[in-house]
Image (tube, rainbow, N blue to C red; front, side, top):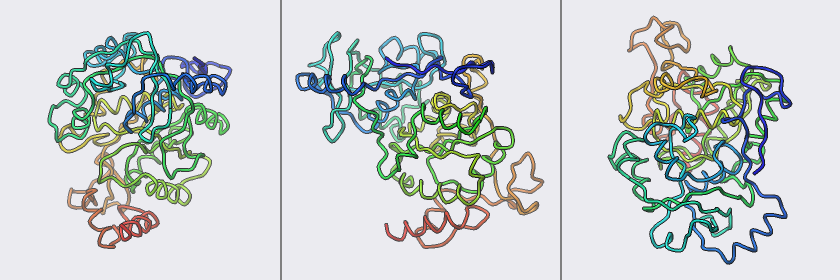
Length: 403
């Protein structure tokens, strides 16, 4: 295993001068050297194999490049139980969502602790090998309640869990190459944690705020980002481009929207755009913590947590994803949440605002649901400028007309 040492959290000098240390202290690197990869490729032909669903393939990528530091592979039963029961790793570090490798009984019959297995993509490409330490049975109901707060199969995260195999395979992984699952996205916008940290150092940033999104950025998002930029050196716009809900805007289309918005409405030396090959869980508060840990590994000191972060339907309270951080020791979780109210266009003050700054009544505020916006776009109608920038609306209207 190779690791990249991070800077101290106390702000002292370090060799790398990163804004913040990786989670757990060092950035894990599970990507094999060229020579080792060739040896493993030859060995893999004789190994039992597991074909990875897209969601697990994205987790494998994040493990390989250190985005899930300090994890070196898929969790064993001890770690799985600790996360479900106490939202911590066995070491005591906060951790909110299990990172596991599912397998069906017929697949697991060929797997033995102490031996290796090959991990392949849906297309059959060898992606990694795993040193198997354990094969154990999952508890679907317990995991659903602990992570999602429900066993309702209408919840997309619970539904995805139900579709997985009955067993989990644990062990450290060895990746043959950090090929990100990000179709249609430029290499310079698929940065690894080591690369974002290098970029932040080049820019001289000592504090960086992350913005998590799975949708095009509208005016309320833009307002939150610019408020955050008043108190930190830089912004990482970090959209997820893994598996999302079917009605979410495709990743390549969203990236076009991000580029035009950042090019025209943000100072170029204050923002970095990079996609995150992570599949959404829609786990609300638990996922907010998971997202924060990942962003710390990418070098961020803060993360914007707004209304209904990573939520879906009415499974979570509007600000549950903010409150969960109140119960976590900030000395253990280095990254800090920046908590924001729901932003809107205020017709009284004629600017973006929140309930903390606006004197307006509810009927004097411009809110649009994602469903209503999609309906407008499908009809070729541009949403009001108070909701979205016209350049973004034009990209979306063109795409919806072609679909």
